Structure formats: C-alpha cells, structure tokens
Image (cartoon, rainbow over all chains, first blue to last red; front, side, top):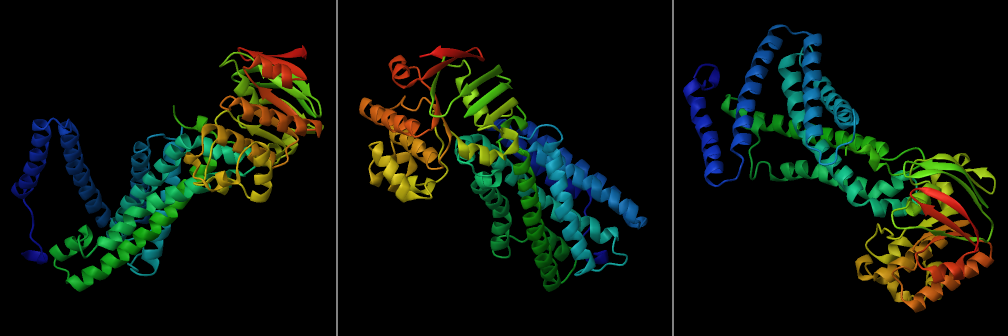
Length: 266
Length: 199
C-alpha cells in the first residue's frame, strides 16, 4: 500500500472485463441485440481512458498553458460531437455540433475558470492536475444536460408545430411562441443534476469522492470536494443548457418570426 | 387592400393578383395544388420571393408579427398551445360575444382543448383570428368540419365583416358555398395561380 492506495494489475482489470463479457453474453442469450454495442463501448472505454492516461501523464510533466488549453479544446470538441450524436432531429449543417460546442465552451470554461481562480487556486492556475479533471467532470455532466435540452427543443418543435405556429399567426414574436417549449427543454436538461444532488450521499456515492477515499483522502475532505464539484456541475449545466436551447430556438426561427423546421436535418 | 406581386415559393409559381377592400376571393383547386402553400406565403409563415403590399405598405416594411396581426390566417387544422380553451383568449368578454354569433356557448371556454369537438375548435380558431382585428383574413376550409347550421352562421358572420370592409381569401371545395360567398374566384392548379373572372 505505497502512496496510500492499492495499485491495480492487468489481472484485476480482467475481472472487470469478464463482467462486461457477461453482459454481452446475456444480450446474446436473451436476444437483446446489444452484444456488439456492449463490446464496442467496453473497448472504447478502455482505449479512450488508456489514451487519456498517457495524455495526462505527458501533460503533467510539461505544465504549459498551451498544452492544457489544447487538451481542453479537444475535450470540448468531443463533447460537442457526442451531443450532436444524441439528437433525434438534429439541426442541419454545422449548427448540429456548433450549438453544443459553443454553449459548452461558454459554460464549462466559465465555471472551470471560476473554480480555479476562487476555490482551488492551484499554482499555476492552469496546472493540468486540477484543470483537466475538473473540466472533464463539468463537461461530462453539461454534455448530458445540453443534449437532453436540445433534443426536447427540436423534437418538440416538430411535434408541436401547430401550437407554435398558431401563436405566430396571431402575431406573437418568435420567443413568445417558443416559450413553453423552451421552458420544457430547460426543465428536462436540469432534471438529472437535480436528481443527482437529491440522491447523492443517501443512495449513491459519487465516483470522484469514492476515488479520493480509495486514494487515501479522509472522507470529510473528499466530501467537501464533492460538494464543490456538484455545485460547479449544476452551475455549468444551467448556463450551458440555457445557451444551447436559446441559440437553437433562435436558429429554428428567422428574422420574420417564422418557424423554420427546414433548418433541421431531413 | 392586398396587392401581390410575383409571390413565389418552392411550391408556388410566381403569381400576382389583388384583393380589394371588402372583397371575398374564393380560392379553388384540387387537394395538394398549392392553396395552403399560397395562404401560408400570404401570412408570411414560409419564406417566399416577391412582394406583398397591404394598403400600399410593403410586407418587408413591417415585422413578421405586425404583418400577421393585419393579415390573419386560420388553417384547416388550427393549433392550440394551452390546456384550456380560455388560455387562448386574452380578452374573453369580446371572444364570448363573437363565439355566440357562431352558435358557441360561453361554457366551451372552460373546457380542455381536447374536450372541444373539431367543429367547435374550428369556429374558436376563427374567433381567435378575428379578435386581432385583421384587415385581411385567410380562411383555409373554414366550414369543412361544420354542420349546415354552423356553416350558415359562419358564412353570415364573415359576410357581415366583409360588409364592414374586411377582405377575405377563402378556400373551399364546396361549389355552392363558393357561389354564395365569392365576389371573385382564384384557381390554383399545380402551384399555378390564375386570377379568375368575376363569379
């Protein structure tokens, strides 16, 4: 138990991998048709985390604002692609991933910068030990909120076209006509983090806190970190979802206050 | 009142025509010919080329909402955004007065939208459009789902408004109704609008 944590070997990971294989086997046996997806996702997890480990090792050995910034941009880019991939009725063209990337760049950088300059104050402030894991946790959760919010907005605009246009026909401006749908989108985006905050500590022990405790940090200290992280995540989801939903609502309408469903991918 | 110049959309070939003050122009043509496309373009709900003038003021000189309050549109299947009928009427006293002319009772306003019948909703959408005091009203099959008595009341109400100066474009498949209402007929076929002779 050097450094206060138990190091894992290849054999230990094989135990975990066997459980994923068990899932795939169940899918095959019960004809769920998910075995391929389970295996691909499992391999992706291992490969992506392996690469992340190497990237972090190299980032930590050269503390540079340029490399930290590049890593952050790459993470936001992947998050944007992930948001785009989760849309049932995506916006057409660059808007599909552009809205996600734009809103998450705004919210994740704002909130990460806030944490790094007030609560955490690492030296230097761009020290990748803090900036990158922090951004990763904020981005992972913001991505879910933004993806949900956008999906409700665009699907709702298609399904509720009659109701939206009925308001437009009577002379309502575009954001008034879209207001009920915008509210519903934001409620959906915020619901997971509200549920997480409500259940955390009673039902679930968050991954980061568990990790710190396994790494030898005293539980009271790990708890304080977890409260900070969840607060940052909640703030980032709020900012990110509002930005994404408003940009998309603006894109789904035009300067003549018309509903433009032709701007969704067919 | 309304002057249309080279109005065109992907489903509509360039067309030009005029609608005078207090005129009722009946729009006829087979289903899918472009009648609804024409109505939506006139209400500025879809992007279109060309220009439309209302009392010699160009559409582009007004915002979309300003235009749509003056050029009202009642589609064949009107939409509802609230739970209860009353949610759609900011001035309920005025709405009830007009609704009663169409044979609707005041109690219909307290009903949930999905508990009103298709015919009631169609007439309520007409009431809703009239309350913005439009100069031009675009009616897409306004009596298609109505019984003869309600149809007669709707025609009477619109005829009274026309006498007060309202200009109307009215699509119908009912030839007898076209004869009763039309001061002129426009035909739409495969996206081509032809300005008709006097009815």
